[in-house]
Amino acid sequence: MKFGGTSVGKPERMHHIVKLVTKEAEIEPAIVVLSALSGTTNTLVEIGELIAKGDRSGAKQAIDKLEAHYLVFVTELVKKEEAVAKAKAIIAEHFEFLNIILKISFSEALSKDILAQGELLSTKLFCAYLEEQGIDHLLLPALEFMTIDSYDEPQIGSIKVKLTQILQQHKDKKLFVTQGYICRNARGEVDNLKRGGSDYSASLIAAAISASVCEIWTDIDGMHNNDPRVVKKTVPIEQMSFDEAAELAYFGAKILHPASIWPAQTYKIPVRLLNTMQPEAKGTLITEEAGSVGVKAVAAKDNIIAIRIKSSRMLLAYGFLRKIFEVFEKYRTPIDMITTSEVAVSLTIDNDANLKEILKELEPFGTVEVDKNQTIISVVGNEISRTEDMVKKLFGSIMNIPVRMVSYGGSPHNISLLISADYKTKMLQQLNKGMFGLD
Ligand code: ASP
Ligand code: MG
Image 1 (spheres, protein in one colour):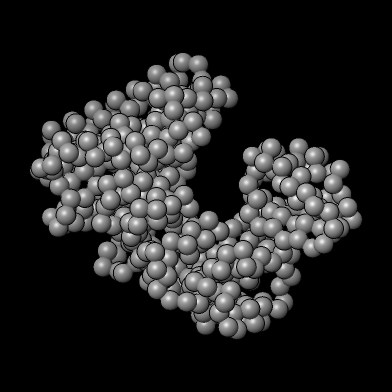
Image 2 (spheres, protein in one colour):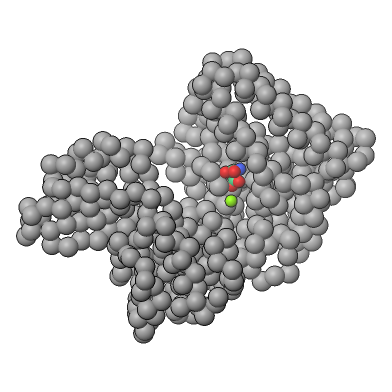
């Protein structure tokens, strides 16, 4: 059971999820994976950046403000004297650590140590509350079993061995608590699974122990058919396949970290997306089977850059695409969408860190055009490219919107369209009406 930042961000929310997890643990043993309290990781990123810049007084201010927030938090979280003392000691320990970091010279490894404090705090405070309530539990330190290799890839085999060993030693326990996001890298240093990585932790843990289910608890009742921040009416999707979920997570659905699909999919662990504030709601069940054919959802991915390389030398040539792809490989920049004609190729990237260098190296291949501020709109559903009338319906509902690129047939479950970001709202609204009959 993984709970995100907003699910633990207020003391009363923590109280509430303790009820949820204890109820579950009565039925079968549960591992609770927690994120940092909402806002904490952002602040820790900021603190790291301030220290890196040498702005120690700015960093000190941010640390003190965060500490004050936690001190208020625990006054509502726990009440008994002993528990209050314990919670305050936890806060003191972790903020002392941050204050010590202020005094030593900055390094990349140290910034990861800073980022880890959020999940360490949330889980320890959660356990302090469990203890106050007399609820039997065990804290599993993620740094003892969650590891990544030198390519930052989780070592599922070793995670499995270590975690099984720890659990073997505590067969009497029914409730376990651990940190999402944090891990150890190949050098043994504290590291993390990148922003939003707690979902990934949960999926890896579920896979490692062959859990009966991996539950991702957030503040919305499952994956919706469209972006609720953009269109008025959306509906939760009851069931979908891992393939569909992967497309949606990658192409913009914010509810699930895209990397968290593969461990559950590989180890055949059903994933359930549930709402902390509405625990009875069905949410979304993700399994191997799709449940139904046809369009399930649309999603949007922002900040996309489109690059077109046009060259008459591409005509009837072989090896042209390889040379172009090699440029992106060299700069470790993933390509999302690609379409080709006989004399031109268009592709998209979302990482502009090396854009200048990439464009320079593409120049010898032909005329290069760049369009920034683009949005990928993905229409996702099982076998949609084989669903009758789909294309007619899709394009029929967006006739007034200029489309820059179309990607059809790459996956049978996804049709992606590239548009200028200016049309995003309009596009999502019109698709909601055209594809789902929702206003
Ligand atoms: N706390 C981390 C973040 O904000 C990990 C997570 O919440 O999934 O990115
Ligand atoms: Mg998240």
